[in-house]
Length: 272
Ligand SMILES: [Zn+2]
Image (cartoon, rainbow, N blue to C red; front, side, top):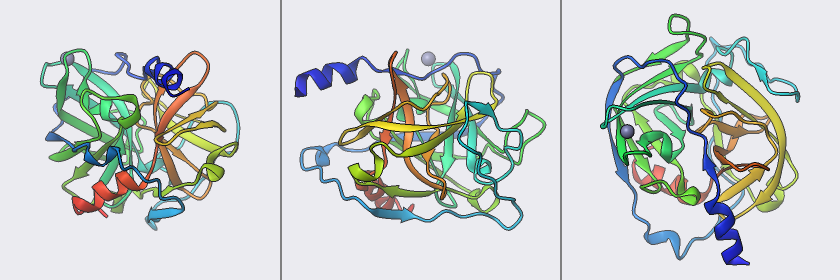
């Protein structure tokens, strides 16, 4: 059974895209790989809230109704303002785009494979983060200063495909942020969540759907996603993120489950 699951998860495809606009020079940063010592003694603490959502007074709140995947016409409204369109350039010179989301005033979460070129196994070197993004000239906030990232695995493994990115400015004060919590299996299975992220055409889209599979570190769901939406938040109607969108098969989509292990890494690096 365990082997069958491992084989199945190995077939997951990451949601990378090559269809993003040509990147300008982003902010430079360094990626660290976190140790894997805790993996064997992994304990899933559930019901834990690591941060509460924050909405700046300057931003209107809107929550979109359950519907088919739709373009978000006003990405500057909270909580969509807290979602970043990321343009990255690797040490190898390759460019790609991804999605990330703020979870504290200086911390963004995304997928580990968003911080590396998988083809050449090289790190992202420069990244620009656009919040409330409609176009290169129309956005709420752009961050292109220095950053530091920590990833769960390198090269990215599906079960540890998460990254914590520390920004040097209090970006969340302008964009707002999602709360983050670790849910029990019962809080996830069969429940409805939203994913909002940028596909290859750099428009912010959202879709609601249901969690159909729960594992120790991953979630499966029937929420519709697009290539390029790697790193998107999986969140509830109270603005708490419970996962990170990372990968797909022909029949379902998959993401990282937010869990105490990730929150501990944030805490150890002074981000909670
Ligand atoms: Zn490359």
